[in-house]
Amino acid sequence: MPELAVPAPATPVERVPRPRADAVRNRERILLAAREMFVEFGAHAPLDEIARRAGVGNATLYRHFPDREYLVQRVVLFVMDRVTAHAEESLAATGDKGGAGGDAFEALCRFTHAAADERIGALCPMLAGDFDREDPELLSAREALETSVEALMAAGQRAGLVRTDVAVGDLMVALSQLSRPLPGIACLEIDRFAHRHLQLLLDGLRAPARSELPGSPATLEDLRQKTM
Image (cartoon, rainbow, N blue to C red; front, side, top):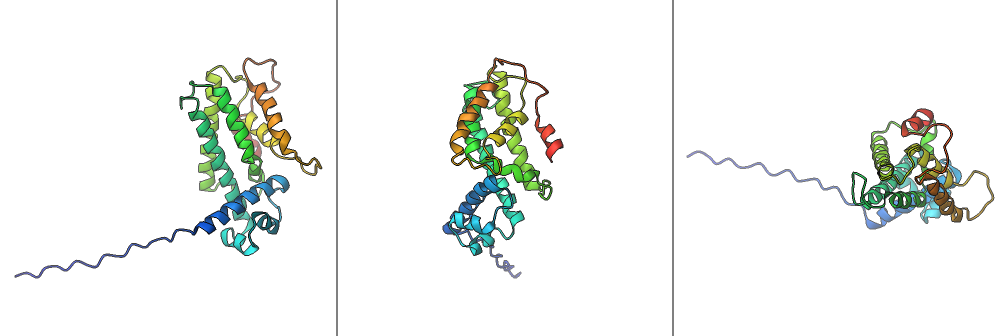
């Protein structure tokens, strides 16, 4: 009688430990603090001040982000992902992901104000010469952001609510400028003016246009060629 083959013992599945809740909270607090500091002081903001604002020790910061380069990259991705989510939610609120339903101009307004609250000016380190703009994760996040904002702008233009002589680059440049304090200014509480001035910008994007804009629209490709 042939012997029965004894099955080999199953290889145990290696379980990746889930991060503790306090570690997840600390990581997000560091990202939020770094986002604010990068907006105020640029990518070379003191790391110990970032840790202080986050309410953690320097050792905790370095445990999550071993060097400045990695922290800057993660902040950029953090902001990109959050702004993309706002763009997708705003587009969905038009009632038509292809873009012509609902009030597409109001959706664009909601997105713009939400992007300002996410401190989109923290993406400015991407323009620095030592920033790795070819990182695959960054390229994927940037494509998702650009696609969602372009769809939102196109929705408003197809609905006849957003002037057609502007492009996504115009919106993104103005948004970054209006939501980021100018270096060296002594104007405290400047944030309280940001949404007021953003609404003035948005009213200028509304169709029908009241004036003719000089030059040509700034596309995302223009921004890549000139800044990246």
